[in-house]
Length: 191
Image 1 (cartoon, rainbow, N blue to C red):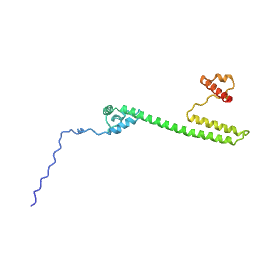
Image 2 (image 1 turned 180 degrees about the vertical axis):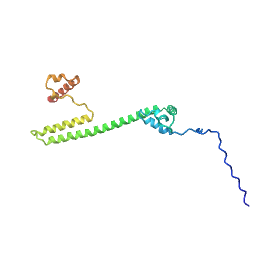
Image 3 (image 1 turned 90 degrees about the vertical axis):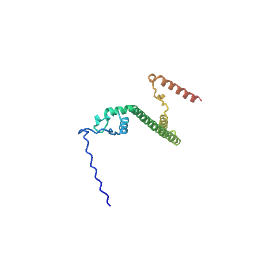
Image 4 (image 1 turned 180 degrees about the horizontal axis):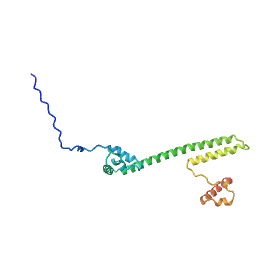
């Protein structure tokens, strides 16, 4: 025998507890706090708490007071400072690595120039004018190698001094360097 049909439940009438247009009470909207925090931490000085709030971006974003509370609780300004310090350190490290790479490369080029000059001198007769060019190449290579290795350059050349007035323009360190080089040159000639 067929079972009697169950009566259908009548829908309950809507409660009129809420007034029209009122927002439903309950859970607040979920904001993507990770993205907001990341934007603040990685942003420049123009990315402020006010700029991240609903007041400047419109609906769908938290209010300024919510952003301030979250920022204070998670210490966003400190995180921003740490991020900037880490970024600066990485940039500085990259700069040092690049500088070292350039120095090594230039030192190799300087040595190669000196080697070419020495080989060239072996094939040049002293009476040929080409020796001056070869000597210049050797000097340029030596200077490049010294600069690439961060070694001190000679700033005073004896051949540039023409009169006592030229000596007056030199500072104490330059005069001392010139004197030491002169002593070494005399010692080499006497030996």
